Amino acid sequence: MSKSGSPLHPTDPIPALSALYQGEKTDAAVIFNTAMAMMGVAVAYLVGAIPFVQKISEGPIPGPFLLLLPIPLWLIIAFHSLITLNAMSHGVSVMIIENALFKASGLGPKVDRNMVGSAAGDKIMDIGVSRFIHKMTTLFVYGGVGIAVLLFTGYSVSSARAFVPASVIWMASAVYVLLVFMVVVSWVVGLRMIHKGRKESCDQ
Image: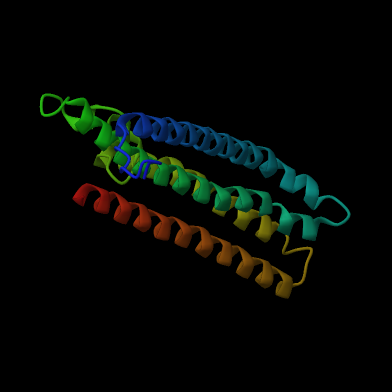
């Protein structure tokens, strides 16, 4: 209400939507760059650590170091799931705002909505809406890194068997199995939430 008691007139929503859009796009870009940097760090660590296993095996206290060697990778993999799902959540938010801006722009029905804004890129990069070949390529990239981390973890734990008791090996194996379960569940739950949010936004 204004001072005179008359109701305030609604302002044009376009500037507000544009501001929200810019903020979401900036956040999404920062998150994406961070995720890609983390992926690069994980791959670099993996490549550098594989030959390092043999050097540690020849050291004075190889067992504990071998068992702990995969831990940095799992920290990166776990956080990468969170930050990638966060980026995908921002993608849903961007889509909602773009839909409102697209309607206000008057481009439809002459222009296909899926050819404008982030929707055009989502058809390639977003596993939730991309085509089969692009889904397979995405799974190959992420699955390849995941399999490499699993193999390296198994290699490190196996190399430590000659230096530590079997009970310690079993405990370390249980911890890594728990980490695998945690990361997989993080992806499954996160993708379900994003799929639900995208479906609800499309139904509106």
